[in-house]
Structure formats: C-alpha cells, structure tokens
Amino acid sequence: MSLRKGLIIFVLLAFGVNALVIAKSVDQETLNSFLGANKLMLLGALGVVFLAWCCDAGRFCALAKAAEEHVPFKLGIILTWLNYFGSAVTPMQSGGGPFQVYVLYKRGIPVGKGIAITLIRTMLTILILTLAVPAALLLDPEILKASPFLKGLVFYVFAVIIATWLFVAFTIARPDLFKKFGKYFILLLKKFKFLKSWRKVIGAFKWLDREMENYIANFRLAFNSGKIYLIIAVILSVFHLLALFTVLPILMTAVGLPFNYFQTVAIQAVFMFVLYFVPTPGASGVAEGGGALLYGLIMPWNMAGVMSVICRFFTDYTSIFMGVVVVIKMLGWGVTEDLHKGASPEEESLKDDK
View 1 (cartoon, rainbow, N blue to C red):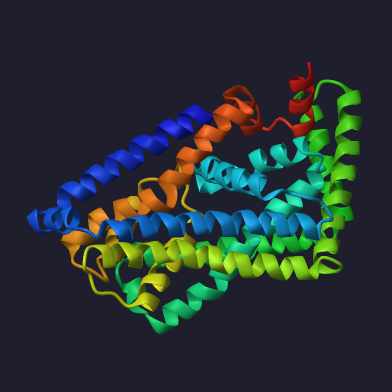
View 2: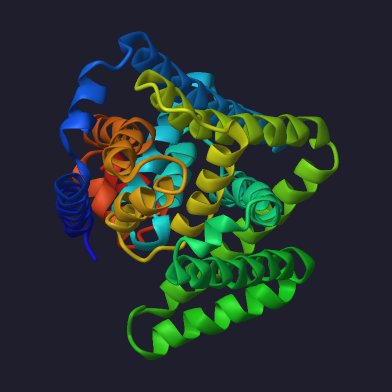
C-alpha cells in the first residue's frame, strides 16, 4: 500500500465513521453541552497534548544518550510528529519507525542504533500497557463486557505482544542465528531476482552484519552504562501515556460530565492497547467507533460519540497534521514514499547527495 493510498484510506475511514457516530449520537443536549463548554479547559487539553509531545521527545533524547548519541530536544519533537504521521498511513501503526531511523541516520546516527532507539521507545510503551491493561481489567472487568469483539481483540493483542517480545529476545540472545536467517532471506531475494547482482548480495550481507552489531551494541549500552537514561526514558514513557489519558477527563470537565479518573485511564489504556494492532491505517474507523462504544461505559451515549471524535482530534489528529507538515517540509513526499517501500537510509542519502 502506497503512502498516498494509506493517507486517503485513513481520512475516508476517519471522516466516514466520525460522521456516522455523530449522526447516531448527537442530540440537542449534546449541542448545548459543547456550545457551553469551558474554553479554558479546552486550552488545557491542548496543553496536556503538548506535554505528551515533550515527554515523547524527552525519551528519544534519553534513549539516544543511553546509546552514546545526541538527539536535540527539537529533533525529538520532530521524531514524535513523524511517528504519528507514519502510524496514521500504515497498517498496524507500523510506519513511524522507518522515517525516524532515516532522520536519525541523516543526523549521523547509524541505522542499527536508530532501529534500536526507536524499537526500545515503542517497546517501552507496549510494556507499560502490557502491565497496566491486566490490572485495569481486574479492577474494572465491565470494560470487556462492553463488546465480545473487544474481548477477542484484547486476547489477540496479548498473543501478538508475546510473539513480539519473543522475537526481540531472540535477536538479542542469538544475533548470529538471526543474521543467518537474514542472509538466507537475502539469497532468496537473489534467487527470485529481486537482487540482480552478487555485488548487491555481498553489500547486503555486509550491511546486515554491520547494523546488527550496532543494534546489539546499543541494547548493551542501554542496559549497562546507559541504565540511568533508560530509567529516565521509562519515567517519561509513563508520563507520556498519563498525559494522553488525561485529555479525556479534561474534556469531560469542560462539558460538566462527572468522571472517575482511574476508570477513564483504565478504559483508554485498554483501548490504546488494542489500537496498536488494528490493521487499518492509523487504526482509523476502529478508533472512532470503538472509542464511542467504550466511552459509553462512563458517560451518556449522546455525549460518548462526539467525545470520542473530539478526544481523537486532540490526541491524534493534531499530531498527524504536524507530521504531515514535517514530511512535506523536511523529507519531501518522494523520499517518504521510497522509505515506505523499503529503501534503506543509505540509499536515500545517496539520492539526496546526487
């Protein structure tokens, strides 16, 4: 799927489901509540989103320090927006990493280190959610009763996460075996003529060896000499999630809805946990419709639908828009498409230098 197609699907699904949710839930009371909303609280919600960006940028900086590299805070903010853009236009929210690795590479950070930094950042979020979601479900089992489909999704996500952690553990524990598999895959590419010359095969072998060494070295640095920075990254990851989860309570306060803070956080943690593995670009469609369904557990239905849309606007759409601006101004759509199709940062760098 091309980035343009991914972006079009994201916009169409988001717009279509948002329109349906609003049409099915909004009534006169809803309109009165939002027209009379506390405007300062709405600004406060934007402020909390900005805080979430800062926490995410800060953990990029901390993880880079753990890898004995330097990422300025401004670049950390850019990487945060790029991640939102990449996640919005690719299935399973998987597309942010290549753009981040490319930008880090252009700033002099080797690809292997860039992959490790971005991977650890993502895995920290997933680890926190993996620990938080079971606790939330034990304390508030009504969340899963909202939908049998949601219950199935939660178990599916746990299975995917366990498989992901096993894969990461395998690459760290047996990098030699992983490299053998990688080289076998490269030979398959040669056999099926995706790689046309042995010179490219040998170059791919050397690249794999070099970047796997950087990848493993970065993990060792992070868990040995970079422990203090890793701890800082963990703390910032927790605050990043809490900031995002605080947007909904602020919006509920703005329109005068009562809430239990723990319950709102628990519901959003479960929902984010699921959205990481939804196959539509940026989880569009599911995020809007599923949000309305879950928010209906803690507020009247005539408020749940529009609250889902507005909350998504604050926490995701603004960040995605900033990501689009960064992509157009900093990378250019051509480079972005090539990275999405699998071109390496080195290849893109050579193109840029010509």
